[in-house]
Amino acid sequence: MKVLYFAWVRERVGKAEEAVEPPSSVKTISDLMQWLIGRGEEYANAFATPRVIRAAIDRSHVPHDTAIAGAREIAFFPPMTGG
Image 1: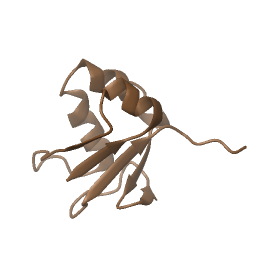
Image 2: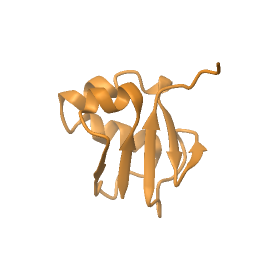
Image 3: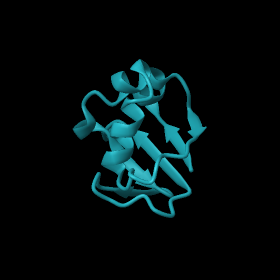
């Protein structure tokens, strides 16, 4: 699946996107964030406070307990503000 990173999440991870193949034990957005944290310090910094990270699967916003099975694209981004 393709994982996209936006705004300060992208800056901390050091890339805008990547293709990943998480293990079968990774079933939800929350699981994916925890798995990514284990990939290195840059991910640990980006996902240090997971509750503030927003996620989308195939361009639809989803809560962290959403299953990722069948997802083609998952995006992570900080909260958005109006203005």
